[in-house]
Length: 490
Ligand SMILES: Cc1cc2nc3c(=O)[nH]c(=O)nc-3n(C[C@H](O)[C@H](O)[C@H](O)COP(=O)(O)OP(=O)(O)OC[C@H]3O[C@@H](n4cnc5c(N)ncnc54)[C@H](O)[C@@H]3O)c2cc1C
Image (cartoon, rainbow, N blue to C red; front, side, top):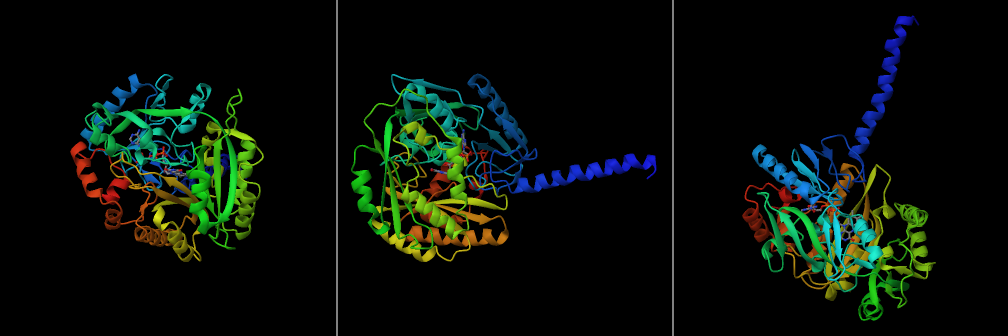
């Protein structure tokens, strides 16, 4: 090859090598499961990996209150003038575009995580962008812990409040029950305090209000003592769940955290259950900082992932969970250690598939009938069922769009689906069937997940929906705060 041809050829080869990974990166980003993975600028996604959307701008907010307020006021003024909708993002673990809107402005609230504990009143004031794991790390040296939160600590306070999350704290209503007050920036940029006595209507609309009424700034939360807990695992027939739950968890004053599991391997599908119970050890916490063991987390993640699309893997996991117990091998655990579980524990690193959560809230009177029906609906589905966890949720008397309108049991389903049209259609069919079943059982479905359910069915499950959307227009007449959840259901 002549010397003068070498340079263009080299540049050509280089371009091919650079562009292939760039195109690949763009494509795999379309498939990304981790909501924190960097995306091309102007694009965003959520934990489903299925909400890839082009937006106008993503604005990362300021870290301090004094800078945050004028910044948000300027953004809202600009958004109104430019007629751009504003959506609000925390840790983005919702799954149906609840944190984004096409061509809209996304507020990334994560940097705003100032926090302060009043050790006399036991109230934590915390920026809405903080994650539970950051709050737990802050509280640990004070020997305090979170009263109510989800089963993982990777979620933001603002996002958790806006879905009104719940977890495995025994006999507990959702998170709203531990909220004393919060500050909210409304569509005019005005900062309002909302509590059970001040702006009470907004207080109830914002909790479980999916970011449609304004921007939550700081939240005042009631905290509880951190304490030493011991673990006990009970195994029994799933038909006896309620008896075991009452005897060994609900009626036992010492039990603080509890969750159940159903066996999802084909062998004796849903026939067996476990109860994972954490009770006060009644001995003081050792004077050492909270521990986390990344190697143990990775082993647990691998055992879990190996059960995807594998009957052998599911049986192995069930045997391990019921034989030695997820938490065996340790004497006691601090409440903070147990609550500080990252979603990386179940992270799916396969970019061709995604893990999809669903949750149904079923009153106790239908508990056994519900499991009996699940045995008919769930087998022989194309979609892979990885897990069913059960926790009790007490009645929520605080939030407007409440899902726990009486004491219920939350059945959490973790599915794995391929990221293709046929699995998406199968998942939609299955979701509709499961929502029908929940309605038959006088139950409800949880709203942070995929938007497979139509407006009319939504109104059957949530009869307060029309009034909720009318009040949305009272507090945000220009519909400045919007996301895909709003457009789907309003
Ligand atoms: C693996 C996994 C496990 C889960 N486990 C649980 C569980 O145990 N219990 C449970 O209840 N849920 C659970 N969820 C459901 C739910 O998606 C999370 O509780 C949730 O996403 C909360 O936090 P986030 O920071 O991710 O919220 P995001 O997804 O970021 O936001 C949720 C909603 O809040 C709004 N929002 C966020 N920040 C603000 C703010 N500052 N002001 C106003 N609005 C705001 C958003 O616009 C959005 O509508 C789980 C989800 C996943 C993916």
